[in-house]
Length: 239
Image (tube, rainbow, N blue to C red; front, side, top):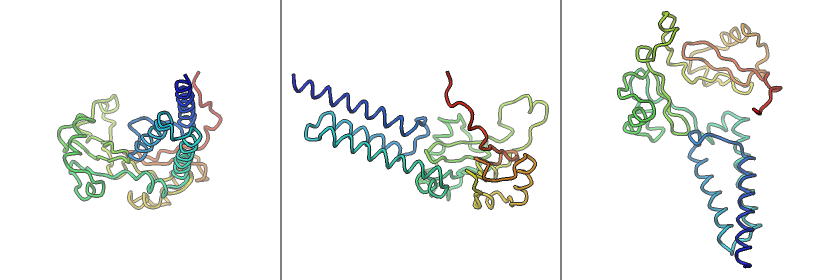
C-alpha cells in the first residue's frame, strides 16, 4: 500500500510540475521546434520519468532538476528575443538553398543537407517534383524547407487573372530589415537597400521612430511591411 501511495504521489508531482513548466516556457507548433528544442523535451521527459520510477531519486531532486533545466531554456528564449546575434547563435538562421531553380550546393554544405534531402522536402512538403519551378527555397532553422514558386507555376488568383501580378523579387525573400527596433545591417547589405530608402519608406507609413517597430521586412514584390508596437492593448485571449 505504501509503495502504491509513493508512486501516486510521484506521478502527481511530476504531472503538475511538467504542466506548470511547459505553460511557463510558452508554446510552439511541433513543426517549429528546433533540434535543441526536441532534445530539451526528451531531457525533461527523462528527468520526469526518473522521478516517477527511480526511488533513488528524491522527488525534491527531480523537481529541482526540471526547474533548473526550464530556467536555462527560458533564459535562452528571452536572450533570443532580445538579441538578433544571440538568436542566430542559439537557433541558427534561414539559409537560401535554391535560387532561380538552381540548387546552391555551397549553401547546402553549411547546413549539412544533401541534394537528396532538398528534393525529398520539395516533393513531400511542397508537392514540387521539378526544382526549376522554384524561385527561392529557404531552409529554416527547424529544418523545414520554405519555397516561393516562380510566377508561372503559382496558382491563379483574382489579381493574377486581372494581370496585376508582379514578378517576385527573389533577393528580398525572408529579408528582415528591422527587428525589435534595431536595424539589421547585414540584411540591408544583402538586399542592396540603403538607409535613405528605408527611412523614406518608413516616413510614408507614418513612422518616425525606429524603436516603435517590432518588425519591418521586404515582401517578395519589393514592398516594405511594417508592424509597429501598437497592439499592446489587444486582448491575448479568445473566449
